[in-house]
Image 1 (cartoon, rainbow, N blue to C red):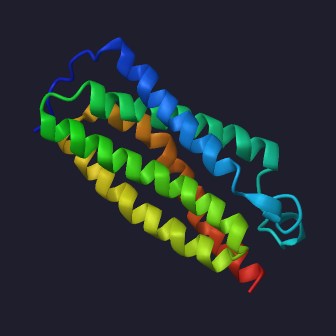
Image 2: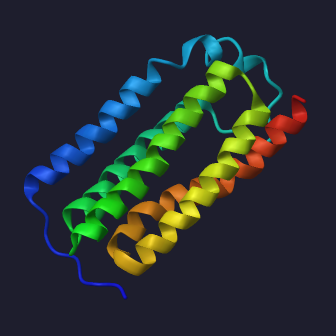
Length: 163
C-alpha cells in the first residue's frame, strides 16, 4: 500500500544530489577516446540525437535521479523503505552511468544494447517497488523510463548497423 511521504531533513537533498554529481563526474573521467574518436565513426540510426542534446538529457536525468534518491531515502516512512528504495534507485543510476562508460571504453554496440536491456529489467523492478512504497518518487523516475523507451530500440539499431 502506498503511504503518504513525510518531509525530509533539508541536508538530505544536499547529500543525494552530491552523490549523484560525484558519481557522474567520476564516471565521466573514464570515457576516454571512445566519445571523441570511435563514436563519430559509427553508423547511427536515423533518430540519433546530437551529442549536445544527449548531454543535456543526461544532466536532466541526473537531476531526476537526485530527486529520486531524495524521495526514496529522505521521505520514506520506514527503515526498510528508506534503504531498499535508496539501494534500488542508486543501483539503477550507477548501472546507467557504468554502462555508459563501458560502451565508450569497450567500443561495443552489442554490449550497449545488452546493458540497456539489463537496465530495463532493473528499472521495472524499481518501478514496482516505487508503486508499492513511494508513489511521489515515481514522477522523478518517469523521465528515465521514457529515455529507456528511446534508448533500447536505438541501441539495437546501432548494433545492427555496426555489426
